[in-house]
Image (cartoon, rainbow over all chains, first blue to last red; front, side, top):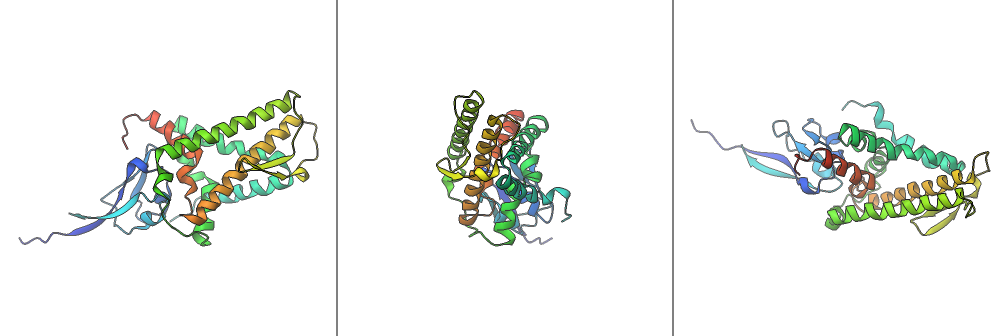
Length: 70
Length: 193
């Protein structure tokens, strides 16, 4: 089978500078984000569609949208 | 997304500032914004307050977001660094304890009640219309003036960074946010960031 490599866009959190405010959680339309133990934001890759709303909202600008091959 | 009851808590934050303009004793209610996040962090081990209930953050989100009063630029890197966030927390604490000390002096009778709101730890705004004398000790009013100063100062700082950077950039260096995150880190030593 000739499978083409799909490039998907996913949100990535720079957790060491995340302040866990939860702005990204509120704005995510897919419910893909959660605050892990009140320390940093975590992305559920299976739910993230890479729309970038969280990256735009993040007050600390610690979320980026990266292309990953799946 | 479904709207929850707590999505309108920005009204409470706004109301707090308005009420304190008319009667300074309402400033005491601000203690809720101190104790609730700390209790949630200490007992629940999460930042539920920041994540859901913080009216201050919602207010900035509304003004900077829907009302467009924000340039929506990235916050400078140093402002999200640990030394700045922890440094600001320590500074905030120092100012807070100085305020408590002034309150103590009034309670002890060593100092008279000063009916001023100190903005940005420097500027003394007249605020005498908000206090009419009560059956309570003047120290009770002194704490209210001091606490309202803390709340107004942090609101002004938050508004400033809201305009300059992203709407909720106050959340990056909010002392309560930093403190609750530290509590959560202590409670979950195995969660690495």
